[in-house]
Picture 1 (spheres, helix red, strand yellow):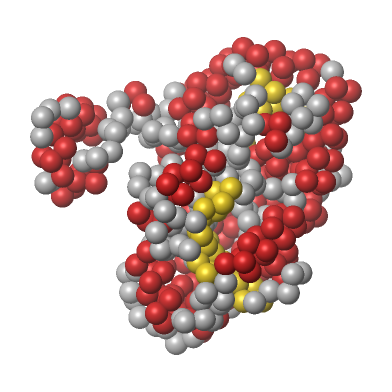
Picture 2: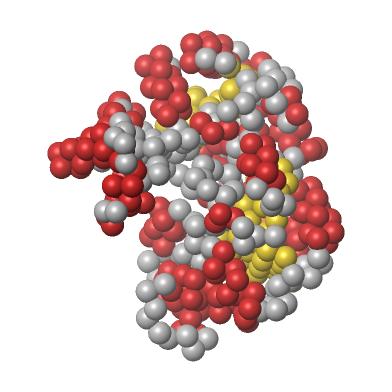
Length: 406
């Protein structure tokens, strides 16, 4: 069985990776590809490791890593300067690899049209698998996939209601990640948060409020890429947003916006209030630079206690990667007391929990003052992950599912 995984990475991660080695972008594709997969970023390298152990031939691509992808194109005689180079190069890589299974984590880039095109050129493809773990406005972009996987139960219900095949798959931890970090370091952070804060419908509005409360009451250290997200809006953009909100509320307002090319994409979207678009200055001022890959796992490992807070659309669904990344490296995790958390961890035994910002402050202070309790929770959480929530187990589950659909 041959499997290709098409992924795209956060541009800041790619920027940091190539900044660490100024000569990397000039090296052959094979060397750049190894460097990309050597970083425990997202699910990088896990498909190669775990599906490889199940007998698959695997190719994992970071399709928006421009230096690597353009090097591959040059090495394979694909020398045109197509502005749509991501899809153009990726399509040729798929065609040459001839996979049985195509997996993608970026439905915005690898659209239904892209999938139809590559299937026409590559008849070996028997199954296309998509992933969605964030907000979306329509199920239509997912219709090109034979199977949708998601960590959010509400997405499973929505996909199935739309007549699509969808399955719930919780995130996980991979033992390889522990091998990539320094477990002898003595540098310790008391209390950390590693993540992002995006102010948009369905994203991290509640997260911002929680972080602000904790910043005022504890020594929380935040690692996030905030300045780009928090850049103040210009006066003209502020006026434009206010005008669009006003027009959208008028009879026929949606149709009016749809006729204006530059803002037509907002016609059917909830247009945010100005105060919902800008991050609080305290949050921006106190945040340290974002960490990714090995640095992110190292930061979690170096933390005595780390905070988890879900995206707004998760509602009552314990679902994000941090649940498993933090517990997997052996750090005590403080997370929301979601109703279904018990399906994954035993609350206040394997992870510490809170149900409000004041309780999060109280729990954080208590755990930092009681090393034995904190360490016990951390050890129990790590043991639970190693027993029930590894990517090895997820790969075995996916393998059976994929084979049943081919």
